[in-house]
Length: 165
Image: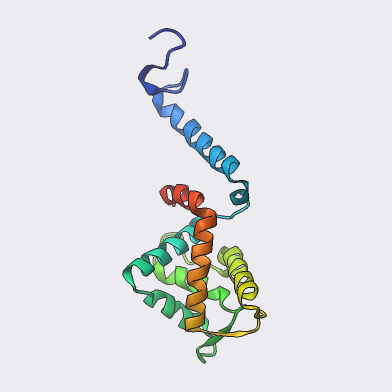
C-alpha cells in the first residue's frame, strides 16, 4: 500500500499493537460524549461487581448472599435496619462474594456513592426519612429498583467496565 495507506487495519502510521490503546481511549471518549449524564457516574470494580452479582442472583433466583449480608449488617439482629444503615449491606455483600480475593475486603468507603444513591432513591420514592426502619423484604424490593435504575443510567459504562473488571 502507498505511503498514506492503512495496511493491515492499523491506525495510520502505528503498528496494530500500538493502535489498540488509542482505539480504546477513543471509545471511552465517544461514550462519555454521547451521554453526558453518565460522565458523572462512578463505576469502579466494587460497583460493577455488585451490579453483576445482583443481576446473576436475579437470573438464578438465589439471593442468599444478599440475605447473609443483611444479617451481618443488622448489628442488633432484630431483622430491621434504618435506610441509612442499609448502606453497609453493599459492603458486606461484596466481602461475602469476594472472600479471599487478592485485593482484600472492601470497606464502607468503597460503597459510599452507591449507599448514598440507594438511600436517596428510597427516601425519594417512598417518602421515608433515613431513620425509617426497613425489613429485609423492603430492602430487597428497593435493591431491585435501585439496580434497575442504575442499569438504565450506566448501561454503556457497565458494558465497557465488564471487560476491565
